[in-house]
Image 1 (cartoon, helix red, strand yellow):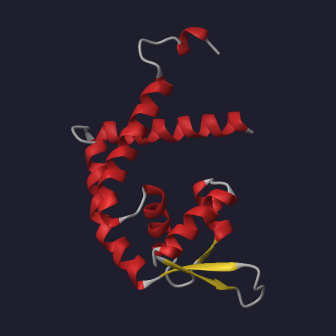
Image 2: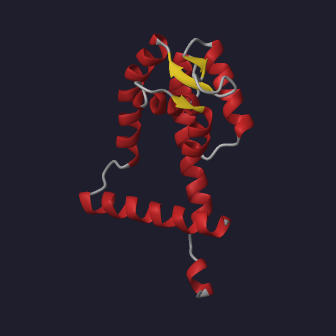
Length: 150
């Protein structure tokens, strides 16, 4: 790898971290009106897409690449808030299926617009080609980091 490639006027990691921090700040500030965090919203959205069958905690861990203990804490808070139910699996009672309550489904519908608006802000003033390139580069960078982690 050419070392000059990594030397640039802007530090990629710092820009990515700043973007992520600002997105999280905006989201958390707006979501506090609903007493939920961005992590909870992501899980509500995921569970809403599995409305018929529900999902298992392991599915959530794999989808979001989050440790079991972190997912457990998030789900505990969501359960206390009345957003989800955890039901023992028919074949193995130790395994809990996670389902949205009516309150969780209503929250999902309410926040769809917020998430769409946030994504619109991120890509504001980008051309169609720039948006395509942005997605392509984000995926490539993510893949590079994931390969490096192995």
